Length: 185
Image (cartoon, rainbow, N blue to C red):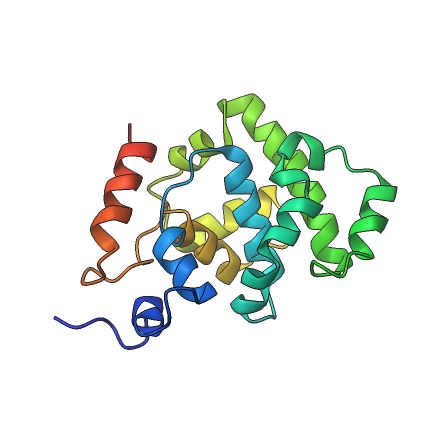
């Protein structure tokens, strides 16, 4: 059986090993993340991709990490107006006021979730049986700037929703194994 010709797996198959899309596909996409801060970081990246090409985000990924305090939920939740202004003047990231405000708001929302559920990851796991429309409704209830495409990509890219890798992709078994071990244990 061949890869789905419209899938990310098929798109990256013939790219050079050092291509940013290939690296992301082979090392990050669809693999479980082991910390709330990294889950928050992926949410920031997915939100910032809205309206842009994913390669733009991949090129700026480390800039986002630095600008958003290594994706520390605790630190970003306490960003001041001065921090917000600094983000909006940072050419290394996407300087969109709504997206910057969403990151700070979402960090604060995740802190509330952590307080109630013990972790963002546990909260996500507790919603495991939801359909995509239910996930979207839940995300819209708790977070800013989280429409259907952002929620879908966040869930797939972090392994909470299937579909990141085609079953024929060489990374499919590894992604499934990692997700099973990390999220289901």
